[in-house]
Length: 509
Image (tube, rainbow, N blue to C red; front, side, top):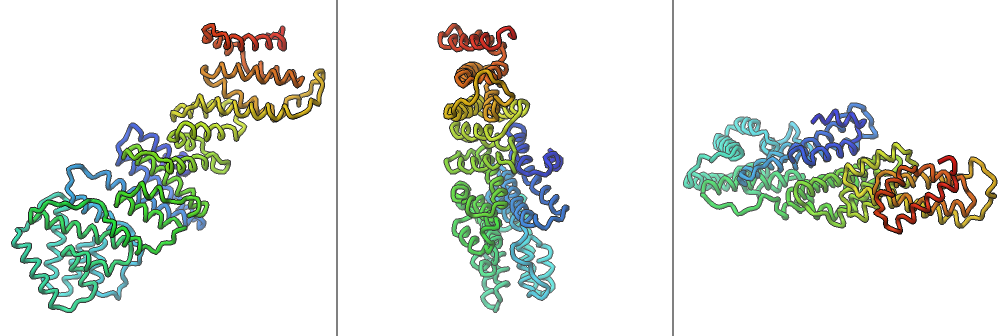
Protein backbone atom coordinates (compact mmCIF):
# COMPACT_ATOMS: atom_id res chain seq x y z
CA UNK A 1 0.00 0.00 0.00
CA UNK A 2 1.45 3.34 -1.11
CA UNK A 3 0.62 5.53 1.86
CA UNK A 4 2.12 8.67 0.34
CA UNK A 5 -0.15 8.29 -2.68
CA UNK A 6 -3.16 7.82 -0.37
CA UNK A 7 -2.29 10.91 1.64
CA UNK A 8 -1.75 12.92 -1.54
CA UNK A 9 -5.14 11.76 -2.88
CA UNK A 10 -6.77 13.26 0.21
CA UNK A 11 -4.79 16.50 -0.14
CA UNK A 12 -2.61 15.48 2.83
CA UNK A 13 -5.62 15.28 5.13
CA UNK A 14 -4.54 12.75 7.74
CA UNK A 15 -8.04 12.13 9.13
CA UNK A 16 -9.40 10.92 5.78
CA UNK A 17 -6.25 8.96 4.95
CA UNK A 18 -6.42 7.15 8.31
CA UNK A 19 -9.95 5.95 7.61
CA UNK A 20 -8.93 4.79 4.15
CA UNK A 21 -6.16 2.66 5.65
CA UNK A 22 -8.18 1.42 8.65
CA UNK A 23 -11.06 0.40 6.42
CA UNK A 24 -8.78 -1.26 3.83
CA UNK A 25 -7.05 -3.31 6.51
CA UNK A 26 -10.28 -4.56 8.07
CA UNK A 27 -10.12 -7.83 6.17
CA UNK A 28 -7.19 -7.71 3.81
CA UNK A 29 -3.93 -7.08 5.67
CA UNK A 30 -2.14 -8.15 8.81
CA UNK A 31 -1.85 -6.15 12.01
CA UNK A 32 1.82 -5.27 11.56
CA UNK A 33 1.21 -3.94 8.07
CA UNK A 34 -1.68 -1.81 9.32
CA UNK A 35 0.45 -0.24 12.04
CA UNK A 36 3.30 0.31 9.60
CA UNK A 37 0.94 2.09 7.22
CA UNK A 38 -0.50 4.32 9.96
CA UNK A 39 3.02 5.25 11.04
CA UNK A 40 3.95 5.92 7.42
CA UNK A 41 0.95 8.21 6.95
CA UNK A 42 1.97 10.25 9.98
CA UNK A 43 5.55 10.48 8.74
CA UNK A 44 4.41 11.56 5.26
CA UNK A 45 2.22 14.29 6.75
CA UNK A 46 5.12 15.48 8.92
CA UNK A 47 7.48 15.51 5.94
CA UNK A 48 4.93 17.44 3.90
CA UNK A 49 4.67 20.12 6.58
CA UNK A 50 8.47 20.28 6.78
CA UNK A 51 8.65 20.86 3.02
CA UNK A 52 6.11 23.68 3.14
CA UNK A 53 8.23 25.41 5.84
CA UNK A 54 5.11 26.69 7.55
CA UNK A 55 6.23 27.93 10.97
CA UNK A 56 2.67 27.86 12.28
CA UNK A 57 2.74 24.07 11.85
CA UNK A 58 5.88 23.48 13.93
CA UNK A 59 3.83 22.33 16.92
CA UNK A 60 1.91 19.87 14.75
CA UNK A 61 5.15 18.49 13.32
CA UNK A 62 6.48 17.78 16.81
CA UNK A 63 3.23 16.07 17.81
CA UNK A 64 3.25 13.98 14.63
CA UNK A 65 6.79 12.83 15.41
CA UNK A 66 5.64 11.75 18.87
CA UNK A 67 2.58 10.02 17.43
CA UNK A 68 4.69 8.12 14.94
CA UNK A 69 6.69 6.67 17.84
CA UNK A 70 3.47 5.21 19.30
CA UNK A 71 2.49 3.46 16.07
CA UNK A 72 6.09 2.23 15.66
CA UNK A 73 6.00 0.77 19.16
CA UNK A 74 2.73 -1.02 18.48
CA UNK A 75 4.19 -2.41 15.27
CA UNK A 76 7.29 -3.62 17.16
CA UNK A 77 5.06 -5.40 19.69
CA UNK A 78 2.85 -6.87 16.96
CA UNK A 79 5.85 -8.42 15.20
CA UNK A 80 6.82 -10.42 18.26
CA UNK A 81 6.13 -14.11 17.75
CA UNK A 82 4.44 -16.33 20.33
CA UNK A 83 7.59 -18.44 20.26
CA UNK A 84 9.82 -15.48 21.18
CA UNK A 85 11.34 -15.82 24.63
CA UNK A 86 11.07 -13.06 27.20
CA UNK A 87 14.73 -12.31 26.57
CA UNK A 88 14.04 -11.65 22.89
CA UNK A 89 11.03 -9.48 23.75
CA UNK A 90 13.02 -7.46 26.28
CA UNK A 91 15.78 -7.00 23.73
CA UNK A 92 13.38 -5.68 21.10
CA UNK A 93 11.91 -3.20 23.57
CA UNK A 94 15.38 -2.11 24.61
CA UNK A 95 16.31 -1.53 20.95
CA UNK A 96 13.10 0.40 20.34
CA UNK A 97 13.84 2.81 23.22
CA UNK A 98 17.44 3.18 22.03
CA UNK A 99 16.17 4.40 18.66
CA UNK A 100 13.85 7.03 20.12
CA UNK A 101 15.20 10.60 19.96
CA UNK A 102 16.04 11.55 23.51
CA UNK A 103 13.98 14.25 25.19
CA UNK A 104 17.20 15.44 26.87
CA UNK A 105 20.25 16.83 25.04
CA UNK A 106 23.06 14.41 24.21
CA UNK A 107 26.51 14.68 25.70
CA UNK A 108 28.84 17.52 24.78
CA UNK A 109 32.46 17.21 23.76
CA UNK A 110 33.75 18.13 27.25
CA UNK A 111 31.75 15.39 29.01
CA UNK A 112 33.70 12.77 30.93
CA UNK A 113 34.73 9.57 29.18
CA UNK A 114 32.48 7.48 31.43
CA UNK A 115 29.49 9.66 30.57
CA UNK A 116 30.22 9.23 26.85
CA UNK A 117 30.44 5.47 27.27
CA UNK A 118 27.16 5.46 29.16
CA UNK A 119 25.37 7.48 26.50
CA UNK A 120 26.82 5.35 23.71
CA UNK A 121 25.42 2.22 25.40
CA UNK A 122 22.16 3.99 26.18
CA UNK A 123 21.61 4.80 22.50
CA UNK A 124 22.73 1.43 21.17
CA UNK A 125 26.11 2.63 19.85
CA UNK A 126 27.95 -0.38 21.27
CA UNK A 127 30.95 -0.21 18.94
CA UNK A 128 31.50 3.40 19.92
CA UNK A 129 31.28 2.46 23.62
CA UNK A 130 33.93 -0.24 23.22
CA UNK A 131 36.16 2.11 21.22
CA UNK A 132 35.91 4.77 23.93
CA UNK A 133 36.79 2.22 26.60
CA UNK A 134 39.86 1.08 24.71
CA UNK A 135 41.22 4.63 24.82
CA UNK A 136 41.09 4.49 28.63
CA UNK A 137 43.62 1.64 28.55
CA UNK A 138 41.58 -0.47 30.96
CA UNK A 139 41.47 -3.92 29.34
CA UNK A 140 39.26 -5.35 32.11
CA UNK A 141 36.42 -2.92 31.43
CA UNK A 142 36.86 -3.26 27.67
CA UNK A 143 36.61 -7.03 28.05
CA UNK A 144 33.44 -6.62 30.17
CA UNK A 145 31.86 -4.34 27.59
CA UNK A 146 32.81 -6.57 24.68
CA UNK A 147 31.38 -9.66 26.37
CA UNK A 148 28.25 -7.79 27.44
CA UNK A 149 27.63 -6.53 23.91
CA UNK A 150 28.18 -10.00 22.46
CA UNK A 151 25.73 -11.52 24.96
CA UNK A 152 23.14 -8.85 24.19
CA UNK A 153 23.36 -9.52 20.45
CA UNK A 154 23.16 -13.30 20.89
CA UNK A 155 20.16 -13.16 23.19
CA UNK A 156 18.37 -10.73 20.86
CA UNK A 157 18.85 -13.11 17.93
CA UNK A 158 17.53 -16.01 19.97
CA UNK A 159 20.85 -17.80 20.54
CA UNK A 160 22.30 -19.23 23.74
CA UNK A 161 25.07 -17.31 25.46
CA UNK A 162 28.43 -19.00 25.89
CA UNK A 163 28.77 -19.10 29.67
CA UNK A 164 29.04 -21.85 32.25
CA UNK A 165 27.40 -21.14 35.63
CA UNK A 166 30.72 -21.24 37.51
CA UNK A 167 32.31 -18.87 34.99
CA UNK A 168 29.44 -16.39 35.33
CA UNK A 169 29.59 -16.51 39.14
CA UNK A 170 33.36 -15.96 39.19
CA UNK A 171 33.04 -13.14 36.66
CA UNK A 172 30.43 -11.36 38.76
CA UNK A 173 32.40 -11.76 41.99
CA UNK A 174 35.63 -10.51 40.42
CA UNK A 175 33.93 -7.47 38.95
CA UNK A 176 32.23 -6.69 42.24
CA UNK A 177 35.58 -6.85 44.06
CA UNK A 178 37.24 -4.49 41.56
CA UNK A 179 34.38 -2.02 41.81
CA UNK A 180 34.51 -1.98 45.59
CA UNK A 181 38.22 -1.15 45.63
CA UNK A 182 38.11 1.79 43.24
CA UNK A 183 36.64 5.23 43.69
CA UNK A 184 34.27 5.67 40.78
CA UNK A 185 31.91 8.44 39.63
CA UNK A 186 28.20 8.05 38.97
CA UNK A 187 28.64 7.31 35.27
CA UNK A 188 31.29 4.64 35.79
CA UNK A 189 28.95 3.07 38.36
CA UNK A 190 26.12 3.30 35.82
CA UNK A 191 28.20 1.61 33.11
CA UNK A 192 28.94 -1.19 35.52
CA UNK A 193 25.23 -1.37 36.39
CA UNK A 194 24.39 -1.75 32.70
CA UNK A 195 26.81 -4.66 32.35
CA UNK A 196 25.76 -6.34 35.61
CA UNK A 197 22.04 -5.66 35.15
CA UNK A 198 21.82 -3.62 38.36
CA UNK A 199 19.20 -0.94 37.71
CA UNK A 200 19.85 0.77 41.05
CA UNK A 201 23.32 1.72 39.80
CA UNK A 202 21.88 3.10 36.56
CA UNK A 203 18.90 5.14 37.79
CA UNK A 204 20.94 7.99 39.39
CA UNK A 205 22.11 9.08 35.92
CA UNK A 206 18.72 8.67 34.21
CA UNK A 207 17.50 12.17 33.34
CA UNK A 208 14.59 11.40 31.02
CA UNK A 209 11.62 9.04 30.95
CA UNK A 210 13.27 7.20 28.05
CA UNK A 211 16.40 6.62 30.17
CA UNK A 212 14.33 4.99 32.92
CA UNK A 213 12.48 2.69 30.52
CA UNK A 214 15.70 1.73 28.76
CA UNK A 215 17.42 0.98 32.09
CA UNK A 216 14.50 -1.29 33.02
CA UNK A 217 14.64 -3.29 29.80
CA UNK A 218 18.44 -3.50 29.86
CA UNK A 219 18.24 -4.95 33.37
CA UNK A 220 15.62 -7.46 32.24
CA UNK A 221 17.81 -8.53 29.32
CA UNK A 222 20.78 -9.15 31.61
CA UNK A 223 18.52 -11.01 34.05
CA UNK A 224 17.35 -13.18 31.14
CA UNK A 225 20.97 -13.97 30.33
CA UNK A 226 21.56 -15.06 33.93
CA UNK A 227 18.37 -17.13 33.90
CA UNK A 228 19.57 -18.90 30.78
CA UNK A 229 23.02 -19.56 32.24
CA UNK A 230 21.73 -20.79 35.60
CA UNK A 231 18.78 -22.55 33.98
CA UNK A 232 16.34 -20.59 36.12
CA UNK A 233 12.74 -20.26 35.06
CA UNK A 234 11.96 -16.62 34.28
CA UNK A 235 8.85 -15.69 36.25
CA UNK A 236 8.94 -12.01 35.33
CA UNK A 237 6.47 -10.28 33.05
CA UNK A 238 7.18 -8.70 29.70
CA UNK A 239 5.29 -5.61 30.85
CA UNK A 240 6.92 -2.50 32.23
CA UNK A 241 6.76 -2.58 36.02
CA UNK A 242 4.41 0.00 37.58
CA UNK A 243 7.21 1.24 39.83
CA UNK A 244 9.23 2.27 36.80
CA UNK A 245 6.21 3.70 34.99
CA UNK A 246 5.80 6.07 37.92
CA UNK A 247 9.50 6.91 37.98
CA UNK A 248 9.54 7.51 34.22
CA UNK A 249 6.63 9.95 34.51
CA UNK A 250 8.47 11.82 37.25
CA UNK A 251 11.41 12.28 34.87
CA UNK A 252 9.21 13.66 32.07
CA UNK A 253 9.24 17.46 32.11
CA UNK A 254 7.11 17.92 28.98
CA UNK A 255 4.29 20.43 29.26
CA UNK A 256 0.97 18.63 29.45
CA UNK A 257 -1.10 20.97 27.27
CA UNK A 258 1.24 20.66 24.29
CA UNK A 259 0.26 17.06 23.66
CA UNK A 260 3.84 15.76 23.87
CA UNK A 261 3.31 14.44 27.40
CA UNK A 262 0.14 12.75 26.17
CA UNK A 263 2.06 10.69 23.61
CA UNK A 264 4.81 9.85 26.11
CA UNK A 265 2.14 8.54 28.49
CA UNK A 266 0.58 6.57 25.63
CA UNK A 267 3.88 4.72 25.16
CA UNK A 268 4.13 4.00 28.88
CA UNK A 269 0.51 2.77 28.90
CA UNK A 270 1.22 0.39 26.03
CA UNK A 271 4.40 -0.95 27.67
CA UNK A 272 2.60 -1.52 30.98
CA UNK A 273 -0.66 -2.77 29.37
CA UNK A 274 -2.66 0.05 30.94
CA UNK A 275 -4.05 1.31 27.64
CA UNK A 276 -7.68 1.00 28.76
CA UNK A 277 -7.04 3.13 31.84
CA UNK A 278 -5.08 5.60 29.72
CA UNK A 279 -8.00 6.06 27.31
CA UNK A 280 -10.50 6.28 30.16
CA UNK A 281 -8.53 8.93 32.05
CA UNK A 282 -7.62 11.24 29.18
CA UNK A 283 -9.57 14.51 29.19
CA UNK A 284 -9.47 15.70 25.61
CA UNK A 285 -11.87 18.59 26.03
CA UNK A 286 -9.97 20.54 28.70
CA UNK A 287 -6.39 19.26 28.41
CA UNK A 288 -5.44 20.61 24.98
CA UNK A 289 -5.84 23.66 22.77
CA UNK A 290 -8.24 23.27 19.85
CA UNK A 291 -5.64 22.29 17.23
CA UNK A 292 -3.95 19.77 19.49
CA UNK A 293 -7.37 18.44 20.50
CA UNK A 294 -8.26 17.58 16.91
CA UNK A 295 -4.98 15.74 16.38
CA UNK A 296 -5.31 13.86 19.67
CA UNK A 297 -8.92 12.92 18.86
CA UNK A 298 -7.88 11.44 15.51
CA UNK A 299 -5.07 9.49 17.11
CA UNK A 300 -6.97 8.14 20.10
CA UNK A 301 -10.01 7.21 18.00
CA UNK A 302 -7.81 5.20 15.64
CA UNK A 303 -6.07 3.66 18.65
CA UNK A 304 -9.45 2.59 20.07
CA UNK A 305 -10.41 0.93 16.78
CA UNK A 306 -7.05 -0.84 16.57
CA UNK A 307 -7.33 -2.27 20.07
CA UNK A 308 -10.95 -3.24 19.52
CA UNK A 309 -10.49 -4.90 16.12
CA UNK A 310 -7.08 -6.47 16.60
CA UNK A 311 -6.66 -6.88 20.37
CA UNK A 312 -10.31 -7.64 21.24
CA UNK A 313 -10.61 -4.76 23.68
CA UNK A 314 -14.28 -4.05 24.48
CA UNK A 315 -15.88 -0.71 23.71
CA UNK A 316 -17.03 1.10 26.86
CA UNK A 317 -19.23 4.13 27.54
CA UNK A 318 -16.11 6.28 27.87
CA UNK A 319 -14.83 5.00 24.53
CA UNK A 320 -18.20 5.68 22.89
CA UNK A 321 -18.01 9.26 24.16
CA UNK A 322 -14.61 9.76 22.50
CA UNK A 323 -15.69 8.16 19.22
CA UNK A 324 -18.84 10.26 19.14
CA UNK A 325 -16.86 13.42 19.87
CA UNK A 326 -14.52 12.68 16.98
CA UNK A 327 -17.35 11.73 14.62
CA UNK A 328 -19.18 14.97 15.43
CA UNK A 329 -16.00 16.94 14.76
CA UNK A 330 -15.97 15.55 11.23
CA UNK A 331 -19.51 16.76 10.68
CA UNK A 332 -18.70 20.43 11.24
CA UNK A 333 -18.46 22.82 8.30
CA UNK A 334 -14.76 23.60 8.69
CA UNK A 335 -13.85 19.91 9.18
CA UNK A 336 -16.48 18.25 6.97
CA UNK A 337 -15.50 14.63 6.31
CA UNK A 338 -18.64 12.48 5.85
CA UNK A 339 -16.60 9.31 5.30
CA UNK A 340 -14.68 9.75 8.55
CA UNK A 341 -17.91 10.49 10.42
CA UNK A 342 -19.59 7.39 8.96
CA UNK A 343 -16.66 5.11 9.72
CA UNK A 344 -16.50 5.96 13.42
CA UNK A 345 -20.27 6.26 13.85
CA UNK A 346 -20.49 2.61 12.82
CA UNK A 347 -18.84 1.65 16.13
CA UNK A 348 -21.42 3.47 18.25
CA UNK A 349 -24.47 1.79 19.78
CA UNK A 350 -27.54 2.01 17.53
CA UNK A 351 -29.27 4.78 19.51
CA UNK A 352 -26.17 7.01 19.51
CA UNK A 353 -25.38 6.20 15.89
CA UNK A 354 -28.88 7.03 14.60
CA UNK A 355 -29.04 10.23 16.62
CA UNK A 356 -25.60 11.44 15.50
CA UNK A 357 -25.87 10.67 11.78
CA UNK A 358 -29.48 11.85 11.41
CA UNK A 359 -28.51 15.21 12.95
CA UNK A 360 -25.57 15.39 10.55
CA UNK A 361 -27.88 14.70 7.59
CA UNK A 362 -30.27 17.42 8.82
CA UNK A 363 -27.57 20.06 9.25
CA UNK A 364 -26.91 20.51 5.53
CA UNK A 365 -28.99 21.11 2.40
CA UNK A 366 -27.85 18.07 0.42
CA UNK A 367 -28.91 17.71 -3.20
CA UNK A 368 -30.21 14.37 -4.48
CA UNK A 369 -26.82 13.16 -5.71
CA UNK A 370 -25.22 13.98 -2.38
CA UNK A 371 -28.02 12.22 -0.52
CA UNK A 372 -27.49 9.13 -2.65
CA UNK A 373 -23.73 9.17 -1.99
CA UNK A 374 -24.24 9.56 1.76
CA UNK A 375 -26.83 6.79 1.83
CA UNK A 376 -24.54 4.39 -0.04
CA UNK A 377 -21.67 5.37 2.26
CA UNK A 378 -23.82 4.50 5.25
CA UNK A 379 -24.49 1.06 3.80
CA UNK A 380 -20.78 0.63 3.04
CA UNK A 381 -19.92 1.14 6.71
CA UNK A 382 -22.86 -0.95 7.95
CA UNK A 383 -24.67 1.95 9.56
CA UNK A 384 -28.34 1.44 10.38
CA UNK A 385 -29.01 3.64 7.40
CA UNK A 386 -32.71 2.74 7.12
CA UNK A 387 -33.43 4.04 10.63
CA UNK A 388 -31.13 7.01 10.09
CA UNK A 389 -32.93 8.06 6.92
CA UNK A 390 -36.32 7.56 8.59
CA UNK A 391 -35.26 9.60 11.64
CA UNK A 392 -33.84 12.40 9.47
CA UNK A 393 -37.02 12.76 7.45
CA UNK A 394 -39.33 12.36 10.45
CA UNK A 395 -37.54 15.01 12.51
CA UNK A 396 -37.54 17.59 9.73
CA UNK A 397 -41.17 16.96 8.81
CA UNK A 398 -42.22 17.15 12.45
CA UNK A 399 -40.40 20.46 12.96
CA UNK A 400 -41.90 21.85 9.75
CA UNK A 401 -45.46 20.88 10.71
CA UNK A 402 -45.14 22.34 14.20
CA UNK A 403 -43.83 25.63 12.83
CA UNK A 404 -46.49 25.80 10.15
CA UNK A 405 -49.45 25.09 12.40
CA UNK A 406 -48.45 28.00 14.60
CA UNK A 407 -48.77 30.44 11.72
CA UNK A 408 -51.88 32.13 10.51
CA UNK A 409 -53.07 31.58 6.99
CA UNK A 410 -51.85 34.64 5.04
CA UNK A 411 -52.82 33.73 1.47
CA UNK A 412 -56.03 32.65 -0.12
CA UNK A 413 -56.21 29.43 -2.03
CA UNK A 414 -56.62 31.24 -5.31
CA UNK A 415 -53.35 33.10 -5.14
CA UNK A 416 -50.40 31.21 -6.66
CA UNK A 417 -46.90 32.64 -6.38
CA UNK A 418 -43.52 30.97 -6.82
CA UNK A 419 -42.80 31.57 -3.16
CA UNK A 420 -45.89 29.66 -2.05
CA UNK A 421 -43.38 26.97 -1.13
CA UNK A 422 -41.29 28.58 1.57
CA UNK A 423 -37.58 27.91 2.10
CA UNK A 424 -38.54 26.00 5.23
CA UNK A 425 -40.93 23.85 3.21
CA UNK A 426 -38.25 23.24 0.58
CA UNK A 427 -35.92 22.01 3.28
CA UNK A 428 -38.65 19.71 4.53
CA UNK A 429 -39.11 18.30 1.02
CA UNK A 430 -35.36 17.70 0.69
CA UNK A 431 -35.46 15.69 3.91
CA UNK A 432 -38.52 13.84 2.64
CA UNK A 433 -36.37 12.51 -0.22
CA UNK A 434 -34.35 10.43 2.26
CA UNK A 435 -37.42 8.15 2.31
CA UNK A 436 -37.01 7.46 -1.40
CA UNK A 437 -33.56 5.89 -1.05
CA UNK A 438 -34.74 2.35 -0.34
CA UNK A 439 -37.86 0.26 -0.95
CA UNK A 440 -37.98 -0.47 2.77
CA UNK A 441 -38.79 3.20 3.34
CA UNK A 442 -41.49 3.59 0.67
CA UNK A 443 -44.42 3.03 3.03
CA UNK A 444 -42.95 5.67 5.36
CA UNK A 445 -42.81 7.99 2.36
CA UNK A 446 -46.48 7.37 1.58
CA UNK A 447 -47.57 7.98 5.19
CA UNK A 448 -45.54 11.17 5.55
CA UNK A 449 -46.71 12.36 2.12
CA UNK A 450 -50.34 12.03 3.23
CA UNK A 451 -49.55 13.91 6.42
CA UNK A 452 -47.87 16.76 4.54
CA UNK A 453 -50.60 16.97 1.91
CA UNK A 454 -53.28 17.16 4.59
CA UNK A 455 -51.40 20.04 6.15
CA UNK A 456 -50.84 21.78 2.78
CA UNK A 457 -54.51 21.58 1.87
CA UNK A 458 -55.51 22.83 5.30
CA UNK A 459 -53.23 25.81 4.74
CA UNK A 460 -54.63 26.29 1.20
CA UNK A 461 -51.21 25.61 -0.27
CA UNK A 462 -52.02 23.48 -3.29
CA UNK A 463 -48.61 24.11 -4.79
CA UNK A 464 -46.89 22.40 -1.87
CA UNK A 465 -49.32 19.48 -2.05
CA UNK A 466 -48.69 19.09 -5.78
CA UNK A 467 -44.93 19.25 -5.26
CA UNK A 468 -45.14 16.38 -2.76
CA UNK A 469 -47.03 14.25 -5.29
CA UNK A 470 -44.46 15.12 -7.96
CA UNK A 471 -41.62 14.02 -5.69
CA UNK A 472 -43.40 10.72 -4.92
CA UNK A 473 -43.87 9.04 -8.33
CA UNK A 474 -46.54 6.47 -9.12
CA UNK A 475 -43.84 3.81 -9.53
CA UNK A 476 -43.13 3.98 -5.78
CA UNK A 477 -46.79 3.58 -4.84
CA UNK A 478 -47.01 0.62 -7.23
CA UNK A 479 -44.16 -1.05 -5.34
CA UNK A 480 -46.03 -0.41 -2.09
CA UNK A 481 -49.17 -2.02 -3.52
CA UNK A 482 -47.22 -5.17 -4.31
CA UNK A 483 -45.70 -5.22 -0.83
CA UNK A 484 -48.88 -4.41 1.09
CA UNK A 485 -50.20 -7.99 1.06
CA UNK A 486 -53.71 -6.54 1.39
CA UNK A 487 -53.06 -5.17 4.89
CA UNK A 488 -55.90 -2.73 5.53
CA UNK A 489 -53.92 0.11 7.21
CA UNK A 490 -51.38 0.14 4.40
CA UNK A 491 -54.07 0.01 1.70
CA UNK A 492 -55.86 2.89 3.37
CA UNK A 493 -52.72 5.03 3.21
CA UNK A 494 -52.21 4.14 -0.47
CA UNK A 495 -55.85 4.89 -1.33
CA UNK A 496 -55.64 8.24 0.42
CA UNK A 497 -52.55 9.17 -1.58
CA UNK A 498 -54.17 8.14 -4.86
CA UNK A 499 -57.22 10.24 -4.05
CA UNK A 500 -54.98 13.25 -3.52
CA UNK A 501 -53.24 12.51 -6.81
CA UNK A 502 -56.52 12.48 -8.73
CA UNK A 503 -57.81 15.53 -6.87
CA UNK A 504 -54.75 17.69 -7.43
CA UNK A 505 -53.19 16.45 -10.64
CA UNK A 506 -56.26 15.17 -12.43
CA UNK A 507 -55.63 14.98 -16.16
CA UNK A 508 -51.92 15.47 -15.65
CA UNK A 509 -51.54 11.88 -14.35
